[in-house]
Image (cartoon, rainbow, N blue to C red; front, top):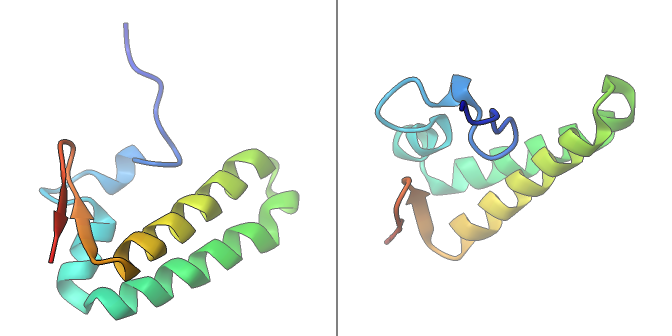
Length: 87
């Protein structure tokens, strides 16, 4: 039996390389830039959720980005499938 895709926490299109996209962004652009990106993306998902047809999913995505911003602010740099790496 196939697992249902997780479009909120780990979309398949974000897992095509060694690192998930958000983790590559931390490596490439730094933690502070990714925190800002997460906050902006959360706002974007909330602002348009009611207009896209899947408001529950978009609000869950906004929550995911806010949680990621909080984790990064707390020093949790990235997560792999088994553990959280910290600085």
